[in-house]
Amino acid sequence: MKYRFSVLDIFRGLFASFVVLFHMAFFTNTPVINNPIVENSDVFVDFFFVLSGFVITYRYQLMATTEEFGTFMKKRFFRIYPLHFVMLFVTLLMELDKEYMSHYIHVNKLDNPNNNVLTFFTSLFLVNSIKLFNISDVSWNIPSWSISAEVISYIVFGLVMITIARLSLQRYKSIIYLLTALVALGLLALITRSFQINYSFNYGFLRGLIGFFTGAFCYMIFSKTVSSLSHINPLLFTFAEIIIVFAIFISIYWGETLKYYGFVYEIIFLLAIYIFSFEKGKLSSILNSSTLLHRVGTYSYSIYLTHAVLLSIFNIVFIRILKFSPEDYSYLFILNLILIYYCSQWTYKNIEIKFKDGFSVFKTAKSSL
Image (tube, rainbow, N blue to C red; front, side, top):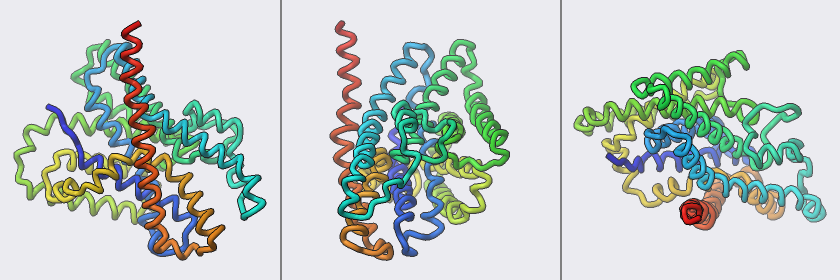
């Protein structure tokens, strides 16, 4: 049976918007943005990893050969790399323009000393979630470290699936997914001597593996229970949906404490994805009825990858040139979000979709040789 998981897409869009606000908070001085919910919203990146593992496992649960693995990686490459590539070079152009712009407005020429030749190539080849010497922070298009972690998760997932097929371990899939997540968590805890997982440029790839295989495990639970639980009274699903949404925002609000036990978020996001994957409760119905929320979900990847550049441009225009104050973000944030939404709509239609469709063209051309 095929599933759409449209509510989960909506959550991806909503949480991508919270990540936008999280980065916006560095420019602002208003309780509307500078509050515990927004300032701890970086943990929503872990929701993306868990959801990715859930969806990828659903779509590629039968992958078993190296040929299928190769096709899988090509599809994922065409899906995520083109926009990453474009935004990396947009960020490069912005860095090169700083010298020129400094003659007219105040520009932080050394805004990020980690934007150098080495980190450019680690970003280009998507290894910027692995700890390397002489790199002390995220660089270039800041959110791209998570795309690196995502790609590494794809590779590990493919290798795990081939191993399962060759050793005839299909009945143990759930256990293998869970063990992979626990091994990644154990390695991170061993290296860092803590259970904190909100790493990026250094151990972000382990953070990605923890979330991705937590999501894979979540899908296995869903697939084994969907038939028996789909007939439960929708009121019970409504109650569960309300409780888990409340748990998410309480855990975010207490983020400064709970981030030291990062696996808590993996559990909460697993439960949220599991509950909303059924789409049986009243909250699911309300979310599904909104065309705007569906569009935000559709554009979520573009929102996530374009927002850092667009936030910088917006800040230069409104704060540096037009002389608005950081307090004015109490209402300017709405205009900023609208700008990001429409730019993301454009990049989705003109970069994401065109190159995604490009895989079909690539496949057809190859088969005709």
